[in-house]
Length: 176
Image 1 (cartoon, rainbow, N blue to C red):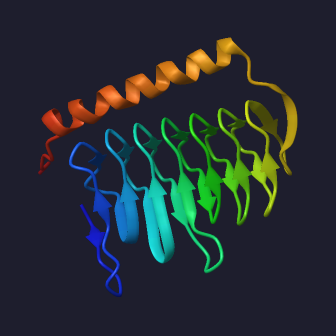
Image 2: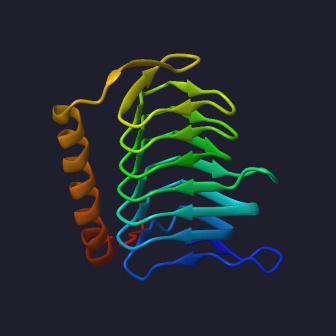
């Protein structure tokens, strides 16, 4: 996997995490236990730190980057959907960033909140805990109910199980 030190800042990846060989990790990036970073994701900690908690899934093609005044902190049991972007933001525990969503500088996604697929959270916006937001710009739609929360936690469990499965069973092959 392409993991790069940059200007003395070196990634720290927990031995029980899984980073796909085609993901790119640069600089001051910390990835917690049982978290996964999927194919073509890019985590670029070349300006400030990126911290990924435990049991968090960073899915295919996700981009995570920072600004001088905005590091990225992503909590535990977070799901960041395919093609999403998190730039200089905080995402608290058990939050979900939907497929193709964009979360910009200084935004804060509260614990258990859900940013719907394709939504745009503008700079500095705070999404309250356990709130579903949708649209461009993202606006609150409703509270995250127990049914939705349970569905996302089943997803977390599945992604954590895949960490060990990928570590044991992912093998690059060559086609002629």
